[in-house]
Picture 1 (cartoon, rainbow, N blue to C red):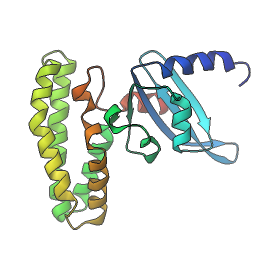
Picture 2 (picture 1 turned 120 degrees about the horizontal axis):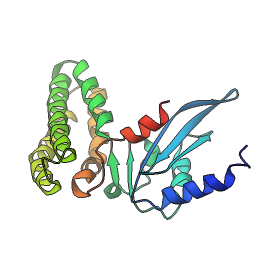
Picture 3 (picture 1 turned 180 degrees about the vertical axis):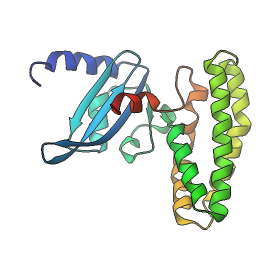
Picture 4 (picture 1 turned 90 degrees about the vertical axis):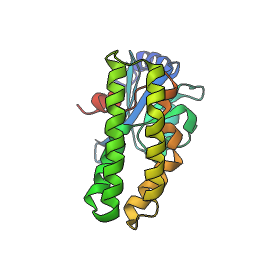
Length: 202
């Protein structure tokens, strides 16, 4: 079967590698009795799936090819850290889950999580206005400025909140902070990786 579909699969991969935006995701899989991962690369018109025995960066690099130079939309998984932060968009839907987990830890962590969740909700409200045409991308860029400052401030505060898991998440998110806002800088980029999640879930 793999041999029979090799040519169209290669054509699909070539198409994905030439696109300005690609969404990547992966999920646990079974290949016989072996633990594996189902990977997906989603673009506007073409989606490529691959089953691999690794969840590592090499698979993501193989899917995109050496010459990919578009925007890469992903979650925070370490397999994507090889790609330049400036050309990544980190998924806000995943971040929202992180913020809600902070809230569940109570104390100062809860305060940090609630503040970050409020900023995330405001971001989504603004973004939805861009999508429905009631706000221009240029207006969105201006509206996001105070949100960006507030998110940075709360993430920095979270690094010393006294709850180890929350401190760790805040440190990791700050490492890719610029990738939280690529959708503001580049038109045509979504702030979430929902396209890949919707493709891979069934």
